[in-house]
Image (tube, rainbow, N blue to C red; front, top):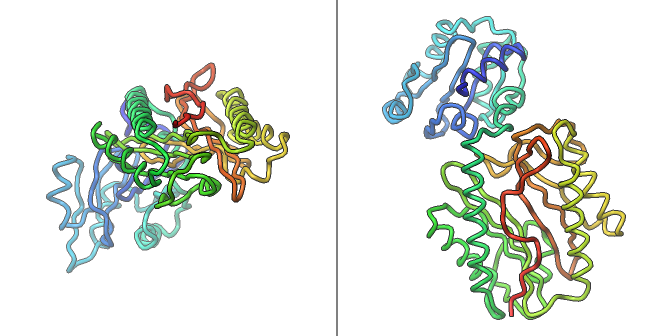
Length: 360
């Protein structure tokens, strides 16, 4: 069953009359269309029987190379209102009772839809396109698995190059170069040496790697419109005092979360499992972020594995499990796996062990 048919089925079950998407991840996933986004309203609109675009004339020729769906074009001198009214009329959507808007849509573009459909109940797309995107198809899994393998290779390239005296930035450049060599686009390279590792989203800089540093390495790249994301640890020469204990606790938290992740379980149960291990070990205040996030077309997307999340996990969902402990002025430690949820539990996409890599 194609994605548009699946969307219409879920629209019917949710009693949504119109879905309106802006250029971005939802539109790319649904139609494989990647139009230029600017201040001009460009909307993909879907009803039970129709699908098409409110399309700036400036973008029409380029966008036509990506789709044969109908365009309702508008030019700068006329504005979008008349073209959008025509779309709604031809789609039978002028009396839509419930609409779903892309949550990443510009506010002025969302206002255009709401002004024209002022009597409609508005919700975001999390129960329509968003719900479909959370459950990965086989082809999506294959792309994510390939990206995970690419990230494993880039991480090993960094370990092979690392040595005392290198800067964080130099390590990141090795990773980025290896990603590029494999045909992937580098997206992020967080390298946090020593006390910098205590900042979960440290900005990689010119700090020099020294003996006794624990190094947080959080990297990812994109290929075929999907991403990778993995965090591992390296030790320069020797581990800092207390490292082995913290590593064992964080790894136990990963294992607890993996054991808790099952279809039908609410996402907060997975977060609870990881957090309880760290809290019971006496380091709860140093686990300062959620346990995980979904991944697919975007590096961060639903489901979010948080203490408050009521999302019910299901087969095919892909998300990270990445607890951490961050000790100010000492070091940080995070271990991250990307998993796809199967009927019997999570399948880890990476092949790398979670042991810290000792750099001589």
